[in-house]
Image 1 (cartoon, rainbow, N blue to C red):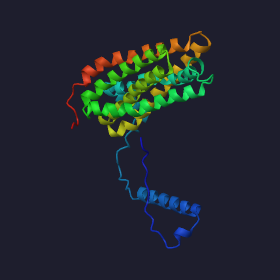
Image 2: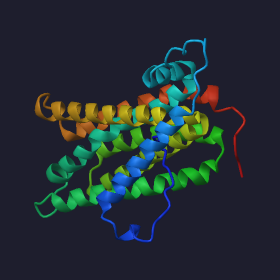
Image 3: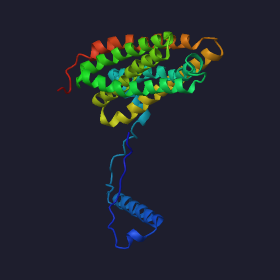
Image 4: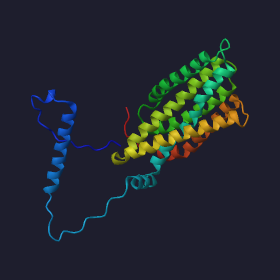
Length: 265
């Protein structure tokens, strides 16, 4: 949420452009303080005026109540939480490049190709999603569940890929779905959240995504170092986990994806 700011216009003097920056800063600060003092003094205090109302609720409590009263917003926020589960896959790309698909005994080139496939998929995914949805909300809801399916299936295939080319192709499609979830859920939140709560909504949105990404990286590290799982097993497991948010998305899609679209071509 953008912070509210207030500034007082100050007439520019001919010599002002030559003044040191710190002097101009203090002059602006002084004028701002004077303006606030004058505005406070102009408010008359009437005799027998009623006592001031109690302070408004804290922003955190207001945000919490907003989420409770708007389950649709809560579900949209959880879309990026499910997408954040793929965060651990970034470490998997490095492990696959170094241990499974090394080129000439070195893993750097293979890692670069896998990360390039990820970046290309992330760039293409929202473009394909926009072509398929064409700005209609019902299609945008459906594209999220489809993207979870694509992302989960792609990472299951990535775990079983016999060659580097097929592995890069699976990563490409997987991150097409991941990026489309990110962009589409963001657009739906912009359309459905109120202006005064939008900053808090996106704070929770990004925070939950980072929390899911951190948890997936932690589990991945445990799997490799403590549980004795191979990188292929972990990649397939991540794919299966990514199918779960897609299944949970279907009831939400059936409930809110049938509303009249806000805009269409």
